[in-house]
Length: 405
Image (cartoon, rainbow, N blue to C red):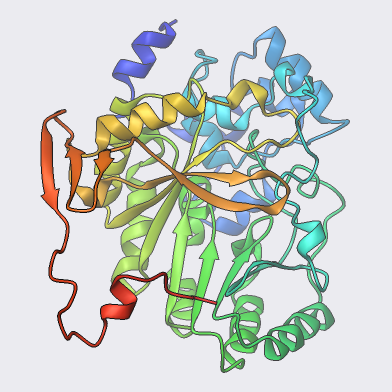
C-alpha cells in the first residue's frame, strides 16, 4: 500500500479507474446502462454489503459506514465508486466518498449549520445572505454524499424537493427584492432534477427582470458525468447568461469522461468554473493543487475558489490549518499562470460571508510610495500618485472611500 507521502507526490494522472465489469457487483451491466445517468442514479451504493463488494474496507471505514446509517448516510455512484482504489484507504477519491469513524468525533466549535443558512432563509429553500445574491436549494438529495459536506444537516435526510408552490414563493420574494441580481441553484444536487423540471425552474427565475446572472452549483461532472447530456446543455443554455460551477478536488477526478462532460458544457456555450475544498491528506499540497488547476484549465474550467473546510459537525479530520492554505497560495502565486490561481477563502461562521485569505505582499506604505515584495522575495518600491490637483472628474473617487451601499 502506498504511503501518504508517496500518494501526495505521485497520484493525479487523470486515469479512468477500474473497468466496471471487473467489479462483481456490475459484471453483467451493459455499457449502455453504465453510461445512462438514470441507471447511475438508481444504482448508487448505499449500504455496507454493497460497498464491501467494491473495495476492501478498513475497520475504521466499516465502523464509519455503520455509524453513517444512524447519522450522515453515504451514497456513491457506481462511476465514482469504480474510481476509488479498492486497496488503498488513502485514495483521494475514496476518502471523499467512503465514511470513516473519524466523522463521529465532535468538537465544541463545530456547528450544525456553520454558515447560518437557516437564519437567512426568508422563505423555505431560499437563502439570502449577501446583498445582491441568493441561493435556491432545490432539494436535499445527492448521488454522492461528500464526507466533508457543509450541509450535513440536510443531505441524506428524508428526501425533499422544493415544490412548485415553493418555487413560486421564492420567485415572489425575488421580485420584491430587485437588489438580488445573481441567483445560485444548489441543494443537495440541483442536476438530480429532470430536464423538464430544471427548465421550469430556470424559466421562472428568468421571469424576474432584476435577475441578471444564474448559476448552477453541481458536482455531477465529477461524480456522474453521464448526467451532462446534450439535452441538459440545451436547457441550461436557454437560460443564459448562466454559469455552471462544479467541484473537482483532485486530479484523479479529471477522468476522460469528466473532461468530456466539461467540454460538452463549454462547447454548448456554458462557461464553467470550479470550487475546490482544501482537504487534509486529500489535496493539501501545492503540487497536487497546481496539477489540478492546470488540468482544469486544459479542460476549459476556470479555478474559482479554494475553500477552507467549513466548521460543520464531523469534519475535523478534513480540516487543514489556515496557515497551510496561505502557504499553498504563496507557492502558486507567481509560479504559475494567474488563470490557475483561485481565491483562497474562509466562509465565516454564523453567516459572516467569505473572506479572502492569502500571503501579504505589502511590506510598508507611506504617503509617497508602497514597498512591495514579489513572489521571489525581491523588494520593489512603487510610487504613489503625486499630482493630486489634477482635474480628472474621478478625483474624488480616487482619493476618498466610495460608498457602495
